[in-house]
Image (cartoon, rainbow, N blue to C red; front, side, top):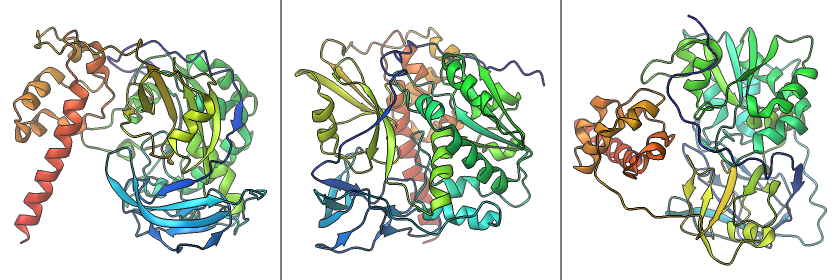
Length: 446
């Protein structure tokens, strides 16, 4: 298949990255309280091991993985467990969590664990090390990385793709990681190649990050089959299926995973964490977060302890008095928060803050059948048809129109001249469809 280094359809929203792409990563201060929900990843929540009043050291295991589709939780700070109680989350639900009070005079040094030796460790040992480190997809999905890397029986991976696209407007987290953590990235790639048994690795980077591409190209190891490929700027280039098409000319089948076409895709920040943590046997305690938006005074890329309350973050960077919306993640695929008392979690890649003058609430008008959403959809769905079915609550008819293939990029909502919140309709519809499917399964086995 002819490789054109792009994919069909997609959109070109303004990038808004100029405020932070040149700002180096800075350490964020420790908040007076750290609030840790135990479900900050897809899968089973972690199982709490500590008790109220217990003193813990930074990096210490606080909650263990509760099964294969789960990861542990480590202490982001040295301090005291003040209470175990339900904590708020971005979904609006209260879930079990841990309240930590940092020691005010602690050096906050990180505990050293048992190293996962790259030369001697087996693929299974590396996978276990990744799970033990609590590593999940840092691009926003928070899917347990060890599960993603487990190659199913009968499948093979010929190409490992490191996703450095970061096509979401405003966010520059991955950009700075590529510029500042190159050695960790290449160490992480070595672990990943050993796990996946891939013959080669491609680091995909959009053309608006040419400095990162040049930096990594100059540091490419000579003893690995690794290359950097620059692709044109287009949203949602960073989606796994789109990136595979752009780099390899392969198309992941409907309902399928990248391994169906011989690839595994890992976010570049996740790769850097693997390279940083596994040699020291440590767990993840912090991550890089872009804090930006028109209403933010001290924009930047910050290394923030997991569990830092959002309200504290906004106080530290300073925001306008009349803020209107705060997004966790970017404005396209992120979620507008309804509670500033939620915490930074492992999947938080950015915080974007808008004031009232930037946020308009246009009226939602009837669909005019213009087809703009169809032209924009990168996986060639018919968002207009799906939107009409959602509006009339015909949820059982939606899977036949490939609702579950939608990865909620928001391109359809962005181009809709009638301001129909299509992606929000689809998120709700998918949730209802999953619940109905689960109910049918349970009824069939009753």
